[in-house]
Image (cartoon, rainbow, N blue to C red; front, side):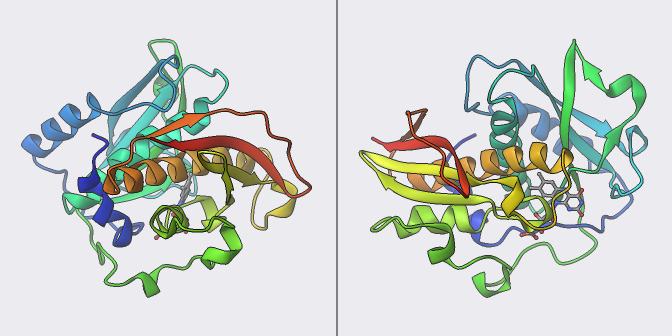
Length: 251
Ligand SMILES: Cc1cc2nc3c(=O)[nH]c(=O)nc-3n(C[C@H](O)[C@H](O)[C@H](O)COP(=O)(O)O)c2cc1C
């Protein structure tokens, strides 16, 4: 699934919040099921499952109505939220490439009997279906994002920085910060107390997922540059405003 073919999608994807009620064709859903088997995890040792849920299987008062939902379930090991974001963002980009609308749903809640799958707890959902609004952005100026200088001090890797900058995040928080380090780029996450519009503890969970989404964009931009990025945890201290997440090593 992780391929440079997803790279151009980073520059046009957007959240879709209005969907056509009708479900997608079975052949399309079968293809998505096939794609799920090709997802690449950030951490191999975390058990996960991705399921397609129907219209009636997802609720939550602030949820968005869609004909389908991709729900991810995961073992709650260290790094599982990063891993969940990293996995589902591959599908977010894939679906957008296939002209299918998507939106991450931090506020969705699956039905009681779908809150766990094979013993793995529910983490988060991506709603999807035929878009009943504009599906893609036409230019980067349509993205509401911080300037590159606000999220990075990295010199000489504009393609990688831009891919992270354009990533979607919960309440558009954009919690990421990138810094050069030996052999790569160190990735930091803004401390929750320094972010606006977040609600503890849900916000804290969503921000970790946001960081996984950013790492997915970083990996894909690396593939576009024919670099296979490996993510490694180094010993780096947190700073006043940021927590250290991981280092992207360019090979
Ligand atoms: C982890 C996560 C959770 C989100 N939860 C919701 C949600 O519950 N409802 C919603 O309308 N949008 C949700 N969003 C979508 C963001 O608001 C959106 O990605 C952000 O504002 C950037 O806009 P864009 O995706 O159109 O580029 C979520 C996004 C992420 C990454």
